[in-house]
Length: 393
Image 1 (tube, rainbow, N blue to C red):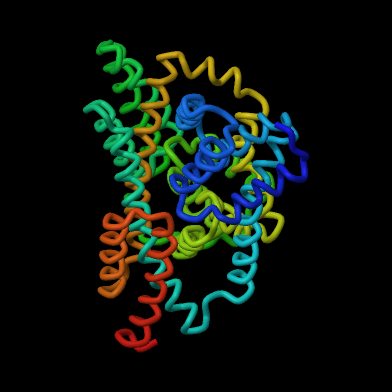
Image 2: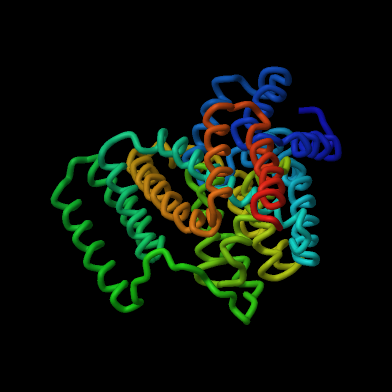
């Protein structure tokens, strides 16, 4: 394509400024402008490329931008396109994170706003879990894997153990090799019991106290990188992994703070995964925000810039399809269990329960481009109202 690096960057920066409404709306915008109008590639090729990225970890809309940038100007073009798409959301979230860390939510206005938005976040996750699960849980084996993964997460079993089992188990289940499936299941059960006996079991902890020692830059980077590599099924799946690292293990933020970050992400023109910037900021300040964001977006850049052609060949392997399907089912279970943690932090009284109900009903009723942002902002306004009228604060 006959374009300069500057024009390519500005075009995808424009996409980033208009990236409201979540991944579905973002993908539709890219499809309309670059395929329907721009004729960069055919509709059929676009659908195949999208299918590849849906099998891989990372936010699909961002990966598509890297892909189109690479088509236009090679690897440098891919990097500039991906950077342009994520930059507006990153700068906005960085600024909001700074404001949140510097001034907090001490005023009644901000306290009510975040009170309402916190109550809406579980509704976003419940709706996303239903949507992802509807596509991912296509047979009884995948449903069983999701349930096992959810229970394991509630029992505080490490998610890497669960997801490893999920992928391998579904390969055998799909091929109807029941003896290896039984052996893997027994090994998983025995290993899980041993792991939990050594570690000690606690089911849905009441709260997580903050750690006095901030996380290192290396820890923040690898937390982001690991989360970025495990985001099968869409950006909402990263919630479980970052909540585990930041709240349960690292304890550099609380569940209410985590909910605030997710809520802010829902109102920005950005890939939803940009809430990782907020998580990093609360862990390590400005450098922590940058480092964790780099870690979490690195796979999204690398998948295309380094190995897209190889990946297109690999994903044709049926065993890999089964492995990824099993892992995705496990992730659905993890998200469902994580929602239980976040519900305990968000729904603390009757008004917050009412806000949750209204937000959930709205998300199921309306599916327009700006619904998520509208629901989160409306929930914040309701929070201010309820705080003033019913709670007297």
